[in-house]
Length: 171
Image (tube, rainbow, N blue to C red):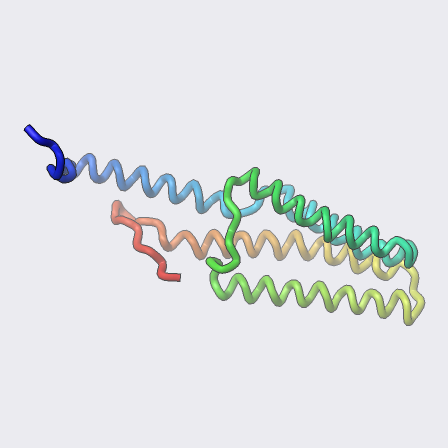
């Protein structure tokens, strides 16, 4: 009796439904882990705040604030958060809506920094960059959580409904 080439063993309808339910459960677990942990955005905002506020401290502090806050702090937080969730959203796989909103928000942060530097240095209003840093911190928390919700919402329609297998998204 040879078993090679015998093909797959047929499943009963009940076994197939149970297997599909397991796949749906695994997909749901991965999708819900796409959002960063609750501590991520406040911490990321603090890194950006350090970079902004360093301009109010002294000209000599700016490189330390930029390197510490943006060059080391932000990437390190992202790595730790990705390890904490086990998932890191790939920019290439995110929807155009999420990517455009992320790019628009980054542009907004750059414009906020430019406005703060103008007020701080040209209008000589000391502490303006600290205020801009606080605005950036609050905006990062708010917008970051909204982007996470959009990422999860974009992924949810791809879950199987009522026992139907999931279909590739084609993105």
